[in-house]
Image 1 (cartoon, rainbow, N blue to C red):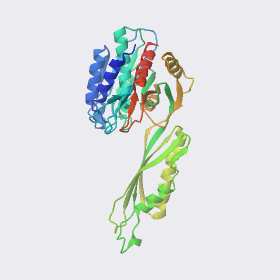
Image 2 (tube, rainbow, N blue to C red; image 1 turned 90 degrees about the vertical axis):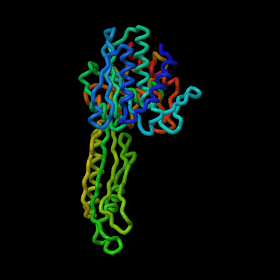
Image 3 (cartoon, one colour; image 1 turned 90 degrees about the horizontal axis):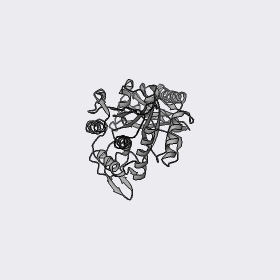
Amino acid sequence: MVDETRLLQRFLKYVQIDSESGNEKNMADRLIADLSALGCEVWHDDAGRGFGSNGYNVYAKLPGETSQKPLLFSAHIDTVKPGTGVRPLVEDGVVKSSGDTVLGGDDKSGVAAIVEAINCLAVGNIPHRPVEMLFSIGEEGGLKGAKSADYSNFASKEALVLDSSGDVGKIITSAPGQIKFRATVTGKSAHAGVAPETGINAIQAASSAVAAMKLLRVDNETTANISAFISDYASNIVPEKAEVRGEIRSRDLGKLKAQAEHMKNCMLDACRKFGARLDIELDTAYVSYKISDDDGLVTLVSDACRKIGVNPAVEASGGGSDANVMNLGGIKAVVLATGMDKVHTTSEQITLKNLRDCAALCLELMRA
């Protein structure tokens, strides 16, 4: 049922619409036009105003023609940088970036798959369940669009978020929560050559704290990373301030909190040792979720995978997505792979087979 030529052309058009996080308006406008033309009820919010974006979340509904319960399909329309002026190349069954930007398959492969499935329903007059859709903005900047979305618009209690790398058939049932870590150490400036003993070196205190931390792979569910260490003074000045930034992720909420507390205590202990002052922020970006492998939603997706000829594979993820927000808000959500590969790099690509399989999976789930 999937029209491969139409799907490819749609995907190529979508990735060439600039939509880096904060600049999603043109992509949102295009989606509104495309979905409206296919007979969907479409509207948008003004979520972008809350975090400096010119775009907005796009909502859509297609009334059902069967007694099946409604199902929410979701993908995000923003991309990471560099995502302006994308020039996609199609070679040997693969769509890839030209090498100077990302491709934007993260997540326009998911967007194109959903719209192609809706197109198939409209053209083929195929009976289907009630279909609801959310196309979010600001996902790459911290799931901002999903956090601002109005889920009361939906009757669906279950959702499929098309936003993972890997071949179509991968079903993510567990993902970590994330805490953003930011600490500012304030010491005391002094002349490093004349009276260094009167100063308190903020770099020394902060680096001592970082050295004491358990970082990177903490355990099989937990990671922690220091991503920035900022302090820049002349060599003859004892540095007064140093800023440390990082993150903690875990699929276990208790471990997430414990690791954050551990890193905070390392900072406190070092500041006490050196006589420095500490200002620290621990911001919970999103919380973890875990859905049973034998849950009805997982079974539904697994059966649909087999029907289109791909093998289902249930996995856990190390990254967050809009599904984290939905699960917290009472909509059971799993993440599905779209086939995107080497995401967030200028080598990003996707095979035509995965692009087709993703649209076929959406179609099968809509008509189930």
